[in-house]
Picture 1 (tube, rainbow, N blue to C red):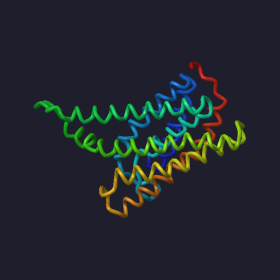
Picture 2 (picture 1 turned 60 degrees about the horizontal axis):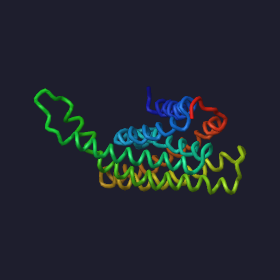
Picture 3 (picture 1 turned 180 degrees about the horizontal axis):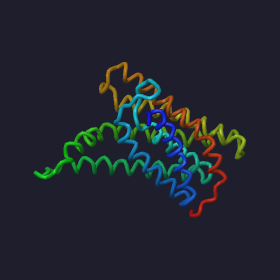
Length: 227
């Protein structure tokens, strides 16, 4: 399967997973996806790929999907619950940072065959995770603030849902992209590749934000089995 087909499939998979977890477990399912998305996204983003002829990172869709989570929480449960998802994800990422570095500190025995691979992946974790923490906290809190600011202007109507969903996400994703890519990849790649990653990362995240609009309309109508 080509990268482009995988990109489209991953959009449907991750956004669909958000709705499935919400249907099965209510807001707890959304909290779970927010944590999952930030953790796996920190690994996926380490992989540089070509997509539609340009260079970008592998974690764009998964990370962008977490913004759908906070938007659903804002829409269905209010600002306080959306802020909880940010706090839970932030706390988990801190534990992830400490835990990955702790396992690298152990001396492997003669039968070990994964320490080298773990060193390659987890060796990037401190810079990636710190960059992700800063970008995530700033952008997600801005997303929640803007969502409710736009809501105060449009009212609690289904007609204005796309405005608060897309308006808040487009702006917050731009801030997240600029902060994260600069802190994580400045000096890692040649300047031409770095600039391409910055631009394409935002473009692909914005594309996911636009495509998640039908999903938040569906979420508004979902009645969770648990809550």
